Length: 184
Length: 279
Ligand code: SF4
Image (cartoon, rainbow over all chains, first blue to last red; front, top):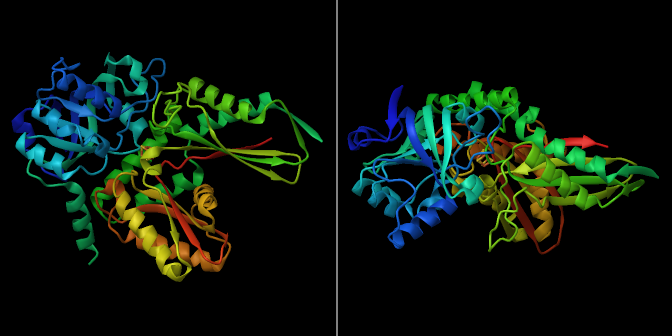
């Protein structure tokens, strides 16, 4: 299986294709509904974001509290479509990857072609397994949001599927058609 | 008259919240591992293996199976010969508070739906109480995640739409849900009753054992037919294609009005959790 390291380069992104299973290591940031609203406010007011978006990957996740002696609690993806409204703006500001679950809007798919980016599906609900792929977790902004704060994670071989690529293809449509073909 | 202390209710609810979030019910785990063995489409099989692995890791490391540890739905069957010392509902909320704080579960509840401030301890619980004969209290805690809850739907069909209308509505709901409820899903279907009762029946259906069928052969056959229809969509694990779209589907049906045919589909996921204790 293919190994990748975040932050991602444009070449990384352009080499990935919908449906591929990959293992992601490196640094990513968590942000979900409330953090997206605040990031959009920062951008609208010209204020700095909690981290520079250039080349970065955002994981739509809000983990359970961290148990003693562990780097992080259970951490699986949340539904990505709720972030669709803010995603094109973040992509225009340099965001290069997103990790979540479920399909994206046409607007997001189009913006991912304009500003080459990749959308990964993590295995929804496999949150204890994914916690074992996180080696460090640090809250870097908006602690008041609790599970929704922005956290910097170090990943080690997180299993992901390339759900949508920079060429407008999505693994949901492709995968379902491919399976249905096998039973014709 | 048997006396039961509110403190015992609190303690029990706290334990059930924690256990429900760490250990998948045996029937759901069984259905998941069986799907893992039987899935014919290799990419889907690989994903099901990760889900099976996750269930084991959660059990062994005592971590929550899923990060969305849900809103705590509590079903209470209270024997009419029981006297509770203390405030029953307060005792349940206190149990949820203790379970979610001590068990390091995620606090996912906001106190007001529009102003949205997190209550910080996952309270309040949603409590469904029934008075039954006897001198025991049966408590079930069912933490419900909202990735799947958000995909649930209810419709007031007309009697003329009949069983075909029900089938169409179930299929439409599954297709609209797509990848969002972390398929493989578990589906609870309510048919009959009135507007609010049908939604409750759908939730009750989610508590029924998978791998068993409705006692009424008519509904048992409908459960099988609907399950086969859902698994023919090709949505598959995580919506990425495959046979295993749904691990199990149960129906609760009940009396309704001559002018109506309410139907509700409560969508749940492979992390369908519930744990019961009898006091
Ligand atoms: S839908 Fe189920 S498995 Fe998915 S995140 Fe929600 S609770 Fe977890």
